[in-house]
Length: 158
Image (tube, rainbow, N blue to C red):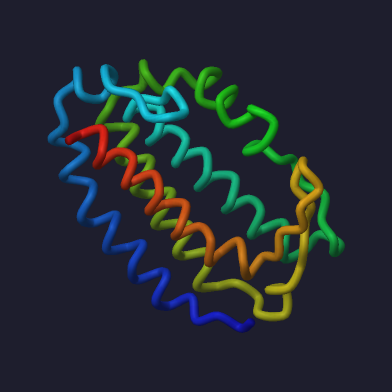
């Protein structure tokens, strides 16, 4: 399934460029008052996206030197992603700092993807639910996940 990550990276970079000013213009009450189906407000969704970026960057690094299949903590299942959001108090984070962290972590994700060792693209780890996750598929799915959360923010912003 050798994927061309170039198109994914370009779309991700374009979404970041488009969304930074949108996010920074949002009024503070909009960031906290409305909630999605997971009971998250916009601040929490952006915080979750920061967590996704950091965890996926770490996975990509580990995929390239850990034995295959890899053992790696799974923050996204079994309610842990909500724990991450709560523990990090994203609702109290300076909004501009949070948006910039979101921006630069995702730009770094693109950088790491550009330099992946192609021999490792089929390395696997198993999620907390036992699902196998292949590095190449994880990279492709990251963009889908990113868009999903931007759509949630768009819907909450009206």
